[in-house]
Amino acid sequence: MLVQATLLVGQQGLLPARDYLRAPRGFLDAPTIFWLGASDGTLRAAGIAGAVLSLGLVLDLAPRYCLALLWALYLSFVTVGQDFLAFQWDNLLLETAVCALFVTPGGLRPRAAPPPHPLAVFLMLWLLVRVHVESGAAKLLLGDPTWRDLTAMASYYETAPLPTWIGWWAHQMPLWAHRASGAFVYGTELGLPLLIWGPRRLRAAVFAGMVAMQVAVLATANYGFFNYLTIALALWVLDDSHLGRAAVPREPPRRSLVLPIAVPVLVALSVVEFLPFLHPLAGLEGRLLPVRRALAPFRSVNSYHLFAHMTLVRREAVIEGSADGAAWLPYEFRYKPGDPARPPPFVAPHQPRVDFQLWFLLLGPRPGARYFDALLARLLTAPELVAPLFARDPFPATPPRFVRVAIYRYRFTDVATRHATGA
Image (cartoon, rainbow, N blue to C red; front, side, top):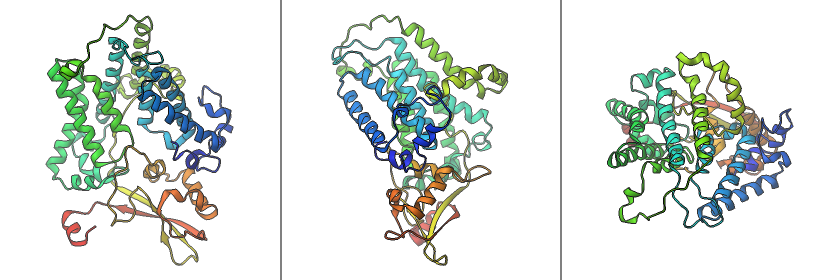
């Protein structure tokens, strides 16, 4: 967030945090430390504090306190981040932090801490199960026909928000391979989680399958830290016996008065979040709405429905500028598809929030967004504020007099075209 915060939500950002917090809302509707101030300096200081706390967590310095403060800081950014931090993996990071508080030792230097309580380990595994099972169930329950007939993967690589050049190669696979990939997704999301509490060797296979899917996803598209976070969660499927001689003997876990209460509550709340996806139980949604509304601002108990609908056609908005209204030159973003001759790059675990968000710009019946209007205005009046977004700025010295947006249909080339043209 440190490298993007001021451009996104700074005083002259695309969606200023100050403007968002001026609307009539209270702390429980918008839980953020930026009520105390949302200047560019405050945003940068919060980003630096997050980096310092992360280092403290890695070095095992007061890890539970570092984790709690990191949760509060990231929630603060997510709250004022608006469209730019509205992704399911932002929610997943916050929920992971809450669950991890119960497996993270207290104290300032807990070198000889006992192992996590079994209920705390269950909570981490429960989150891992939900990410997979809820995403798999949503593919079935929300009725996307391409997931029903296993053709979703034939479109996925071409229409991913920020594809990679390996995604181009994956797109060239025959239809039977795409169908097999779709079946693998279902097996990983709906089958493997059922085996998480199985015997040791079976759990090792579950871990390998889950990691294999995440590696395939991060190889073919850029989703920020999502795949890395999911792999980290999958580590909880393993235990010390999988480490063999490297395992360190430890004393038994200590008793807990909090976990027998906290874990059932969090599990119940997570079920409440997913119930609206279950059509036979949809009548419960009205009665559960007050609970869901109270939970929503904290983004720490969520439902997950990753890739539940497959986008079949890729349309890209290309910004063009002109000095005279006759000759138009395109702006080239750093990460999103633009110049057809440029291979799509690897970006993750970094997530360029503007590039990623632009994928959603043309979805739905009414294309457009406030941040995009602000971006166009900045190009005309203060281009230096948004210059970091572009790999190629056709007007580096003087702003254009006019800007327009051209809409193009983008497709991956086939192997023959690539050999003939190089694109």
